[in-house]
Length: 402
Image 1 (cartoon, helix red, strand yellow):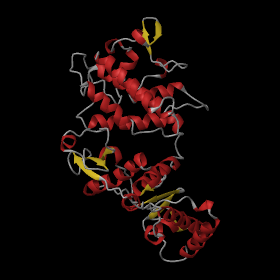
Image 2 (cartoon, helix red, strand yellow):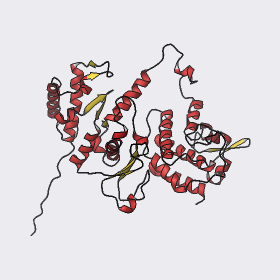
Image 3 (tube, rainbow, N blue to C red):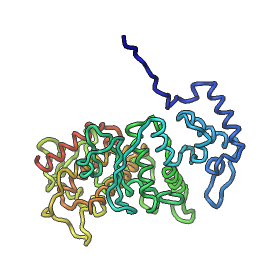
Image 4 (spheres, rainbow, N blue to C red):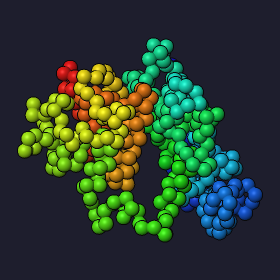
């Protein structure tokens, strides 16, 4: 009779010490002792900008060190090794990009394979990551947003991932390395979320710090931002302001969307009808309002300021499916419709920028607006990913009469 030999998988990710009093006490004691040593980096014991840093209270330093120790315990890593690579910005714990890539390989045995397209040291530089080697026929046909059954692929570009501002590690000489670091954690967040569990990387912390400083900065000698930029003066939702931003993003204006059903409403002479089934018009008959925006991320106007014409050649139908796949990587901000619109606008601009320009054909521009409108609904959880794909597919097929 054959003997069956069983092996137990090593524990690579433990639950929080908060549910184990003994471990919790041990980690707190360790953090307290470490907080009083020279091992604690400035990123955990000081606050303020480079020229005006000040020491944090020892209680705060202990808390920061404890956060690192607790994460090290989850990852089964040495807290001494992680301390020098950690930072906390506005309460958010982050590590250098290389740490997350190393944890993915050391704890889960996952080695990501990297493939590049585009021009190095430029915003067009693009990376594709997969946990297994890609066949040559796939490598030779890589495109942004590509997904292949049986392969767990994540991709991104410098233009889409680069952060700016003081302290950002994104520089032309580091683009290749930063794409690997950012790609590794983006891959993990989709395919191995337990590996990162909400942990941020250093470039993301820089972006958070810059956004916080921008929010706190204001000119005390001039009128408020609201009066200077024509914003609303009363509390609550203002449809006009949202409409402006939606049009800028290439989405449908609020008065073109049915408030109850979420359907797009087409404008006719003196009346409106919900665009569903055969009642929806072709792209050439869209309303003046939805095609008159001159600053849309979809670019309805040419560089000379003149209107584009429907006689220009349409983009391929597959391009719009790629466009939708690229937008799927971006979830809702949780900060309201305006923030979602701004985020999806940047994603749209990055996608078309890598393809030499925004669509000029009126039908293409209209199709892009509608695709963005569908993704805005997804970003607020009105529809799920499968429904998003289904709606976009039907929209593309109808636009091209496939």
